[in-house]
Figure (spheres, rainbow, N blue to C red):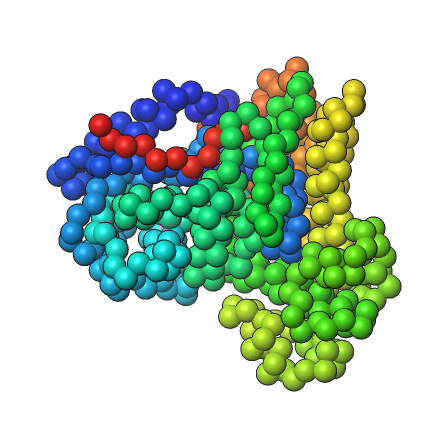
Length: 455
């Protein structure tokens, strides 16, 4: 009824052994080393990292694992243990990333190219790589970012150029943009900075991670709604980034600031030196709930349509005509406040901590659903099912529009919770039922990315 995430090192050893055999079968040699990058579940703080605000994720045991050998072949050969992901070979001098065609190997090459550019390497070591993954694809658990991080780690090790975890995280966050996703850095940061047994408050500019001890007496359960959403293959994600960017500029203009250099709602708050509550008041005062047209934005900012397209919109949002600035800004400032409240409850550990945290998670989902509009009917159904099954809090996690929920469940209700969710969400649908064993599982904070040298 429940797939228990592999918490023991034995499970990782078995995965390593299986991958080693697959590598030998593919390339006729043994790997030199392995690189591992975990997925993550974001407990609270959705779609605010790219606005400059802190988030609160934890690494999970599901991972991307690569076996690697190094050569002077001047090529990078990529293979995957999952047959649907096809082999790919590229010259080290001809790395190209096609953002119009976000295939798995291009995510890997994002990590390779990012490290190469950061280190200013004129040439790269040739590599044979075999990749294995236990993170469900397009599930909101950061499979794509974990693949980028794993590739960055592989490239660092293969070229014998040590980098700090913070540098790796920052570099991999930037280089995922090669595939067209304008994310904020949460996924890469937790993949490198995670520590077993603790969630992390991740803050940006400068990047730093603070331990957050989760309360005793409750467990976190991940459930996949079985709807896939690839961020790089649609404009939903980047459209939200752009709407927040425009909202920043409109609010700054209303306050008489030089809006041209401001890109993030968080930077605007710093510039104004006011509280999140005051930022919410500013949103109410300045922005209207009705969608903004291109003409209204251009008129307010005093720019041409061409300037809007060239300087503000992203490549895959050039078609956009309506922008919900009020709703997006309200979500971001409200969610940023909920993250800080969540950490404060964990730090102070009151008697009703589990109830308070559950309420914050529920309010987060409502905001994602109603203001940010990044949910979908299946996610909403699954959240409702989880709450009815005994969760004190449940919300979508990750980008949304599909993927997973995370629920906080009192320990004594866990067995009945899993049974009820299984019976009410998975069993009635044949496709969901077939995916259930890898779609419903208990998780706890896992460790960060690592290199294993083959002996």
